[in-house]
Image 1 (cartoon, rainbow, N blue to C red):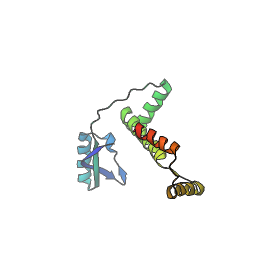
Image 2: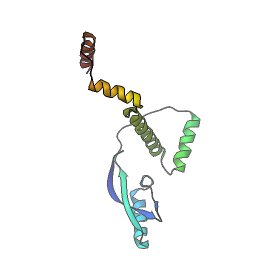
Image 3: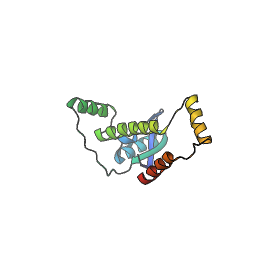
Amino acid sequence: MKHSLIKPIVNVRNKTVHTASLNLFEYLKANSMAAASGLAVEGFIMPAPKKQRIDLRLSNDDKSAIEEAAAMSNQTITQFMVASASKRAAEVIEQHRRLILNNESWNLVMDAISNPPVLNDRLKRAAKRLKNME
């Protein structure tokens, strides 16, 4: 998610005000109250404008649960859906990019790298097919 640094937000007794729930007016009001009280100030991040859409169909029960969770999180439905989907997308991508091998598999991979097979006709054809797919 892209963000741009705008202004600070208030940290009241180690509880940070979530920027997703603040508009600029609320920020200015909170910041002036913090300054008057001598409270610590932290970074305020405003989300970048959104340009893409995703339409989806869901059951009434799923919609109700999402609306309730968004309200409990003090977020709009869009903010809740984007945050939840983005977090899950990052988890799935990370799981698929990382390969964890046991010792036996690691040794097989290292052996194949250290001692590559002799190029035979079958391997040459496979390499050629791979190159043509790129």
